[in-house]
Figure 1: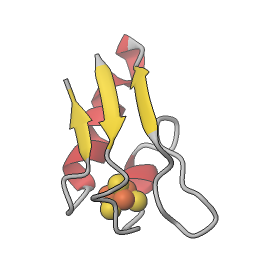
Figure 2 (figure 1 turned 45 degrees about the vertical axis):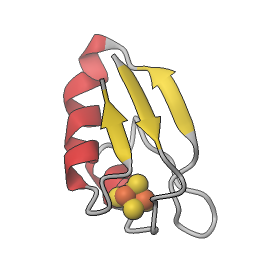
Figure 3 (figure 1 turned 90 degrees about the vertical axis):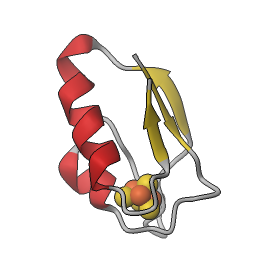
Figure 4 (figure 1 turned 60 degrees about the vertical axis):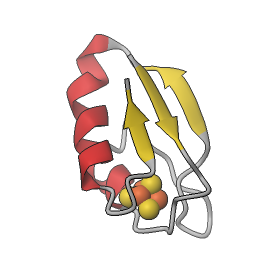
Length: 62
Ligand code: F3S
């Protein structure tokens, strides 16, 4: 499963990292770092929770 953070949509709500700190990281200003990676199966639920938590829908899990 691929997880992608669209930094153009990120507004720094930080809910992704709060929900899934092992998947998402924030920069010094609280914006999600660019991410496009394969997530191991044991972190997939976390990745989905983080994506669901983002009010900007900046995270895609496919
Ligand atoms: Fe950005 Fe959404 Fe996370 S706005 S910091 S990707 S919760």
